[in-house]
Length: 586
Image (cartoon, rainbow, N blue to C red):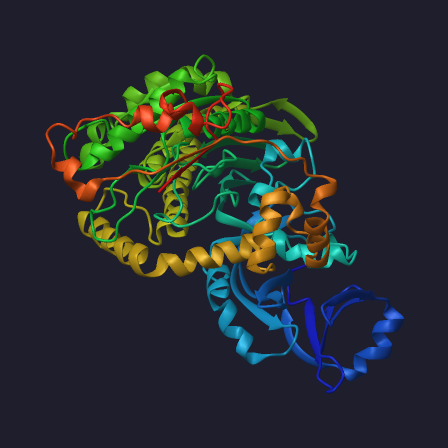
């Protein structure tokens, strides 16, 4: 059965009674009522008794949930439904759809609310969001790779982009699985490959993590939780009858605190936003996290190594990456392979990737790939290659394509499709084109344009110029839309700031009245801890010392780092040898 607009949205406008929305789904007798910021599931009898008071508003393919926005002391609620989508292909009994059009319905019937969500709507309609559907009750959860689906049915929240939209219904006990879609951001490429009378599905799925999501120059590096910018899990899979084989690769920004400030073309210089010591904890968290999720790791670092010219910032970042890795606890079990892509593959010449192959071949073989027949898992992937360049876009996608094609031969061998060169060539051709498309789609999300492939100088120049315009003029509003979609905007600033200080991140989704009460009663569960504060003033004497030959090279380390040792004891409250937690400099 083909998918149709099985959802119907009705409204009731009957002042002075409150405005309400009724959501129905074909093949279901009950309905969901939205009224006065509350949600209730109505039985078939209850639906029948109230439905005559409602008029039809629109039809939809599915519902994403309720978006919550803060407007002073009020919370604005929008029911988000999918009104346009395109099928990109089928995997087993599930069909994957790309969202092309959404409708935001204000649950208080105020037309002026539309302006607040225009950027979020534009983001959801950008063609980078996907969901799966099946006419049966069982359908593929596209947040999970094939190997993970054999182990668990729990959705991977890293790739569950409309999770915040589910929360409002969850608070009222609504079964979201029955009423709401789960949406992934990234790229899905599916092609049918004929092998005699049999049909195979060649699939590439890239899942963009929502844990540190954002646009190119707004989000770089790592955060305190160990999540990196532009973290993408890419799965290369083949479905053939009752067999499946898949291979995972990951990409992500360099896991240090760095940024690229600047507005003009070429002015985005790499800058470390925190000192080296500050990155140690986040660096370790990141690698512990991906080792826990994916097994063994090997770093493939494609950054430039030249300290001269425009790649100077890249070389500095690459050296810091290597330095942190060598000093970290992961040095022994996570190899770090440096390959200056621009130097080795000038002008798009990828022949020198054979040099990289000799370095990573041992890990390609050791980490293997996933293969299952029916319900039996015959081979598991035991690790992944973590590839990065500066943006983790063009160079990274080219190298991941190379690795994917290397593994493809082994995948076909497990499927007994390797003996005929014609079949092997057919799969290679299909996957190469899908990898190009995959690179374009991932690049559109992060940089705003397709990938710069190095094949056409004219095309690459046009895309480079388009990226500059995108980064300077459009990225800020897109970043705000991403933040609203993922984090919500339901708290006023004072309560939000206090809640973020006192509570764990997963508690911030609680209802506003619950958060307010938890903050009020924080004394019952928060324990005070003494910290050490160093307070000092720095008299620059009108800048004269900086022009002085005598003072220009004077170190400030004794003043900043050892004030308790060099200061008069009358100025030190307590000296227990512990380091300073906060510096206050005026």
